[in-house]
Length: 513
Ligand code: GLU
Image 1 (cartoon, rainbow, N blue to C red):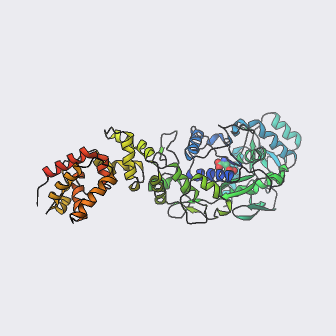
Image 2: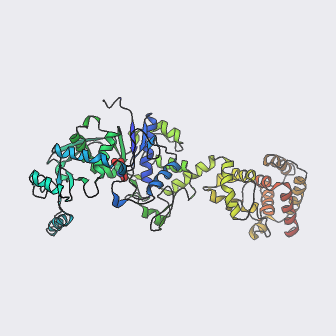
Image 3: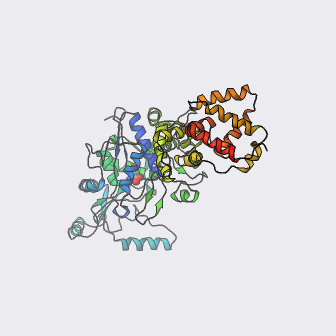
């Protein structure tokens, strides 16, 4: 099958060893965008063959996080599909046959070394300042099928000795690889060791074998994954070759690292804890009870989170920064993914959230605001919450900012900010506000555009100072120099409450200072 006409099939293949880091979400996102852009398939495969690193709850977390992000699979553990099952622990029976094929073709061998024996070898090397490598230089002297006669190998397997199958890494061969982001990469095999492919102890393959076999069986056309997997690429190339699958092996793209806000070093969970930003999409409670913050719980919109992640490593080639998922799908290409690490900036992420906040539907924001209002003992209609949201959203980053921006609407002033009183409640202003109260009393339609038009005309016709009137008006209704547009405030309060507040201010504040 030629690569050109091959159907695009990509997979996100997380191991459920903990919550999905935002770097992992970016990998999933780029795979998803690439699949959708090319009219191909996006597959989620769970790589859980390392039972020592399995963390309960991690798999469910991964699925929930991807759903929250709007990343939906065509095939996977939950979706099913023609290559089911998509969880490697349920594909156990498949892998041994492939490991044995490699032994038969001379590309792999049995090794019987106990972990004690290997530790002793390691220590011996270390004591001379060297590192032990299980490779071409030692494999024929160790307890392997390369040294032992076939009958002895068979006898040991028969009697139940533990064994592993290791890849027989060729000695001193240049492996030429191609990475869609990095171009040509060459590695000499003498720098590589003989990786374990299969373990009799748990009848499970290791990552490398399971990954290659499944990518082959699932007809994966492109492997898009984090840079940390680049060192495994020569082994993966050689595994494809050993199986005779080089012609159909996937193309590879290794994504740049996510860097700390300082730009130095890989972004880690600890940076988030230290600097107070989440590195996980959703809050995660570890089996030990340790809680890590999540973007969802911190009040980020998934669209903002995704928009931010999309630009961490991929460059649209224009100044545009706000992209919804469909736009990202339309524009995404691996050619525009950079080679160098992408610096994460928490402030920019907040900026993205604010942008999405400004564009958000008022009713939806109102709905999110209602529980916060209830927490403060305020019962409010959805209509009113949505009206307020519409007026304050341009000043907010999170829905949790709404209360501080609008609490004065629900708590009428009983006292007045001293410095504002001194500044504005003086001269003719109190009597002008009394006149403004009468003007407002005559208006029935309290929508902000209507009151604004009438009051504005009145201020101009009387030759009053706009600043003096509006500031003392605000002081009287709000109690301080804060809040949003005064006519919008009046619209939310309604005529009755606006007049009541003005009456209270006029009765309480000293006259004509
Ligand atoms: N299971 C690997 C991981 O956890 C997948 C790496 C790959 O995509 O090949 O990241």
